[in-house]
Image 1 (cartoon, rainbow, N blue to C red):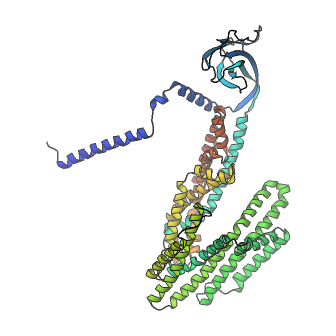
Image 2: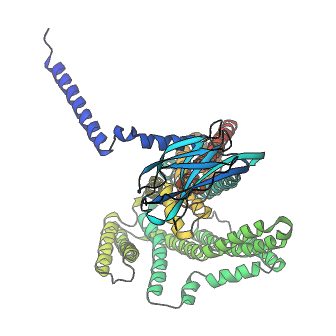
Image 3: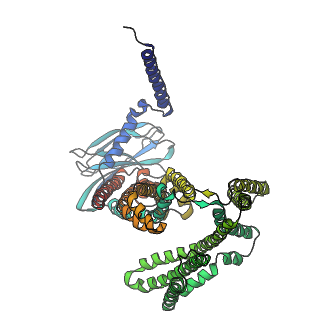
Length: 618
């Protein structure tokens, strides 16, 4: 029976795939430098066994030790007279060398007598003027005897002076107690757990709002007219341009500070530091803001022009009150923490003081951003009103041309200057105005073609931008992030917290957003049908469905961060990994075994606890 052409082609294709696979793996074998002969080297096998023996025999407890010591002398090179050895005293240990002189790299035999039976010992070599080296370890037999023929004379050790071979036998006495390695490991393991906890918490705070922006089902329906979107962006771009140009022109810092309202924020913080007076100011500000925003002003749902103006005014007043209140609250909290630090300890004062400092540092930039957004919202409303009044497509395209040219030019100007100054600080920027003009032309063409009334999928744009950022951050290993943060904030757990927090934002943001995308759309449709706003829809239709999985993912991430913090410690990020690296580098494998055992126990315990918690929650 002859095979059909199709069957023959299939067989030929299969053979070709096999050949290609063999070639790929052959190249991979060569590229990865797999060499089994190296693994069979006896010296390497002995070192591996020694390391495994230490790792699998962690020094959890230790006892006081007693020891016996004996010496012998060696001469490099040999002379006419042999070196004089210590006298042999009856009942005391002694050492014999064969030979007692020679050349560098020679092998000599060391034989010990009269030591304590069945005890561990060390052979140390001390060349003249150099540090002592531990050369061999041994164990005596029942007669206190040991013979080694594998001691090699150190290289570059020629000298007229005698070289000392010290033999010491040690044995434990007294009751066992926790070893120094165990104590250090427990302290570092606690640091590691809290390092992971702080990193997970910081990542959680940022990842939750980001996850809504990275959820396709929430962002897809959001659309905005091109003209309105450009009008919202222009104040932000102009604010950034103003700050940049003032700094480039060497403007006084006070002028730049006032653009971000830094003096007012610092003054508000100082009010808060006045204790009860600051607390009273905060209460008055909160009460006054509530009355103004929610009582004296008209209904914010009014669709008239006056109603829209009221909504913008509410937004501006609310932002001002929130920022000012945050500054005052930081000062009040700092004073309260100082007041109770005598009772609760200085830790609370330190934490609150750090948070207060962070708030005051961040508020100026946030203030400028918020007011730029408020101004952009006002301008966006005006543009929407203007587009509604324009008659004909030509007028709307002309408005789109103007707004697009302005936004495109500003975007390319700011982007180009930022990138160029990052890589070439202080150098003159070539083609700056040409690139700015090109941005204006491209933006103007886009605005002219689309028109100011063209509806853009703003939600999808934000969705893809956020997703791209999260994917980029997630692709960078925390180890690399740890190296960067160690350079920035120094060696210690703070660098580890920042590295793991940044990676946690990317990982949790992805997990959270995918959970939002998989929720039941029924409650959302029902709530939306009642006329609820988008925030109300998220509050009552989305949040109740995602709380349990969010908690489960957060616990799981804490478990992951505990494991990752071990690796972060290798680059100076604090935690157990830092001391583990030191012990391994110093060939202290028994101490390293304590750290490895602690890591395994803690990771297993956290994994079990988080699994049980996820079962209860979900």
